[in-house]
Image (cartoon, rainbow, N blue to C red; front, side, top):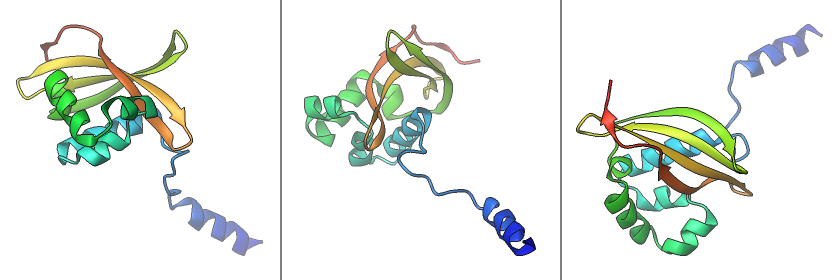
Length: 133
C-alpha cells in the first residue's frame, strides 16, 4: 500500500504530456505567435482553421496576409492573453499585443475546436491602437 502511495506521489510530480485535447485556445494562440517569431510560416499556418487554410491555401499566402494586415502579429513585441469568452455562439480569445513602437493592439481570436485541437478561425481588432502603459 505504501509503495502504491509513493508511486502515485512520484507520478504526480511530473506534468502530463500536452496533447491536442489538453491544449486550450490561448495555448494555440501563443504557439502561433511563437511560430511567427521563429519565421516558421508552416507552423503558424498549422494553427489556422480548415476554413482559413482553404481560403489562403499555402503558408506563403497566409504569411503575406498577416504581414500586410496584422504586422503587430507577424512581428510581435509583448503578447498577453486576456479573457476567453462566448459571444454570439463564438469562442473568442482576447489578446493584447504591444508592437515594436510601444502601441497596444487588442484583438479577438475566434477559436474553434477540431479533431486536431483548437484552431484559429479569424482575428478582428477590438479598438484602435493605444500607447502601452
